[in-house]
Amino acid sequence: MELIYNIFIKGGAWLTILNGLWATVQISALSLLFGTILGALICFFRVGKITPLKIFAQIYIAIIRGSPVLMLLMLLFYGVFAQSGLSPLIVAVITFSLHTAAHVAELLRSALMAVDRGQVEAARTLGFSKWQTVKLVILPQIFHISKPVYQSTIINLIQWTSVVGYVTITDLTRVINNIAARTMQPMITIIGGIIIYLALSYIVQGIFKLTEEKK
Image 1 (cartoon, rainbow, N blue to C red):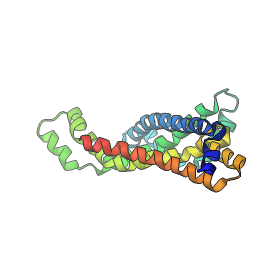
Image 2: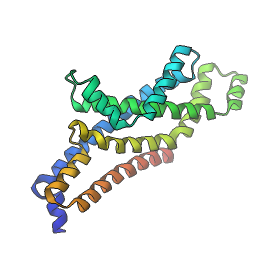
Image 3: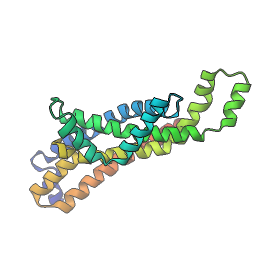
Image 4: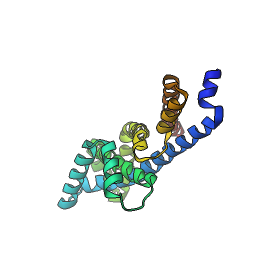
């Protein structure tokens, strides 16, 4: 217990960990929000009938999904936004929003393709308007089908943010690495960091389960 205290509590180490955790949560939450909105828009382009937008969406998804997120982060931070004056945290949010959008766009498209067309046709036959059909038939099915993959996307996003230390952001992973170097106890410290990331993942799973129970 004394060793645990010296590593994670002594000298305000727990405050440093909380600050790193807050940076991780901030980046993850903002990237999820903007990435989901952008992903829905990209999906709309992808399944739409406007050829230039459809081609753009296909290329965007192919490039972003196929690129390592760390390389994308470094490209934007050290290249595209190098002279912009944007803070590393904002660049990180932009990066992970773009990356998340590509995954969200594809999962939404897959969910849309899985919607039972017979139900759509039946709704139209019963006199539902196009908007009513979308609202009452298509969207609920898309949400239901995409939910498990979306949950995994959120958990993956939290894990992806562990690379932001490469652009000088003191997130949870970087804090854990610094504490491990300072205390010369890498194994215990890293295990502690893994436990925190696992806790975040289980919180996400818990939120999804609560939403299912409310239904």
